[in-house]
Amino acid sequence: MNRLRRKACVALLLFTLFIFGTMMGLRTLKPTDGFSDLAPGMELMPLIGERMDQRPNQVVESAGQNGGGGSDTKIVFSNSGPDHNIFYDIHIFYYLWYGSPQMDGSYIHWDHVLVPHWDPKIAASHPKGRHNPPDDIASSYYPELGPYSSRDPDVIESHMAQIEAAAAGVVVLSWYPPDVADEHGKPTEDVVPAVMDAAHRHSIKVAFHLQPYKGRTDLTVHDNIKYIIDKYGKHRAFYRFKSSTGKILPLFYVYDSYLTPPEAWAELLTVRGSHSLRGTPYDGIFMALIVEERHKQDILAGGFDGMYTYFASNGFSFGSSHQNWKAIKAFCDKNNLLFVPSAGPGYMDTAVRPWNNHNTRNRVNGRYYETSLQAAMSVRPDIITVTSFNEWHEGTQIERAVPKKTVARLYLDYKPHQPDHYLELTRKWAEHFSKEKEQWLM
Image (cartoon, rainbow, N blue to C red; front, side):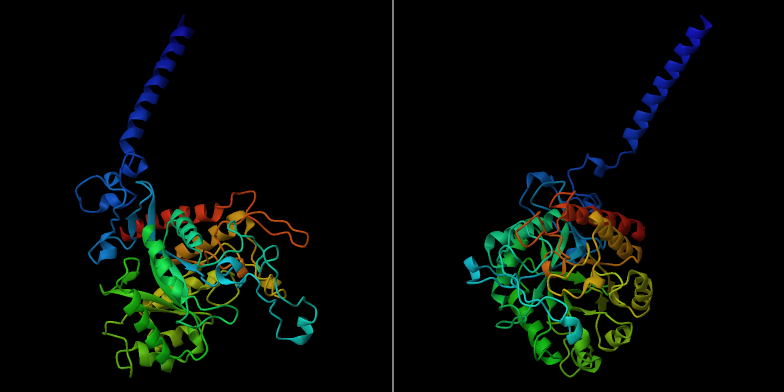
C-alpha cells in the first residue's frame, strides 16, 4: 500500500513539474519565435500602422537604410511573406559576363581558354585550348540553369530569387564602362538596368564592383562614378550606406585598386585632391582591395574609406587569410576605416588554371563556408561580403548547381545536399550575423 502511495506521489509531482515547465516555456517565448507578423528585428521599429501581412507588395526599410536611427543591420520585409527577410549587411559578388548562342550569338565565358602558366616549363605539362559548351564548360561545377546568358530576363529573375532566398540584401555587380569588357567577354553595361529592375522586385539593392580595364586611372574612375550616379542614382534599387559620420552615400568596391598608385587615388578621394569627389554630389564610400600587407598604408594614403578581401581561398593572400583579419580590423578601427571580410564556400579554378591546384579549397559539404563566415563574424565587421554568387570559373559560386556527367567530364556537385545548400547556409549565417550584431550593440 505504501509503495502504491509513493508511486502516486511521484507521478503527481512529475505531472506538476511538467505543467509548470510548459507554462514557463510559453512565457519566455519571444515574438520572433513564431508569434510575430514581423520579420526578425522589425519589432524594434516604431509602429507604422497596419499589419505587414496585409500589404504583401509593400517594402518597408529599416531606419538605418533611410537615414534615421536604428540598428546597423538593415532588414526589409520581403514580398514573399512575413517570415522572409533580407539583410543589407550581407553583400554578394555577382557577374554579368556569361553568354549563350540563343541570346548572344555564341557562348561567352563558358568557353573560357585554359590560361597557360607564366613559366613555360610548367605550362608545357598542362592542357591547352579552350572549353566547348554546353557539355564542356569552364567550371568544375555545372549550373542548374545550364550555360546561360547573363542578359536572359528569365535567368536574371531566377538569380534575384535565389539571392533573396539566401537573404543577401546587396548584389555587388561586376561593372565595366559602356563598350568595355574583360579580355574574354563582351560589354555588359546595357544589362545593368534589367538587373536593377529585377533586384528591386525582390527587395534587393545593387552596389557596383569597379573592374580594372585598359587605361583605368583615377581620372577615368572619376568619370565612371559620375556616370553610375547620374544614370542609376535615382533607381530604387541603388544601394547607399550610412557611414559612421551619419552620411548616406553610395558604396563602391574597387577591384585591383593596388594597380593605381595611392598618390593618384588621393587626387580623387581626398578633400584637397585636384579632381576630388569629396563633398560633391558624386561622393561615396570607396572600398579598396587588400591583397598584400603593405596595401593597408597605401589604402589609407589613397583616401579610401575601407578595404575588402574578396578572395575565397584562405591563405592565398595576406588579405584573404583568416588569421590576419583581426589585425586588419584593428588597423581599420584605428584609422576610422571600414573592414569588410569576404567569405566563400570554397575555391577551385583548375578548369581555367589547370596548374593552380595548390590554391584549391575543398568545400567539405559546406564546412569550409561556415568556417569562413564564422571567421568573418569574429572580427565584428559592419558588412560581410560573399564571394560569390556566380563566379563559376573559380568555383566560388553559391548559385544552384546540379550533378552532371558526360563522356569526357564528371562535374562536382553539392551532394549529399540539395542544389540550394549554399543559399540555405547563407541565409542561416545572415540571420546569425543579425542576432550577433544586436548583442554587440547592446
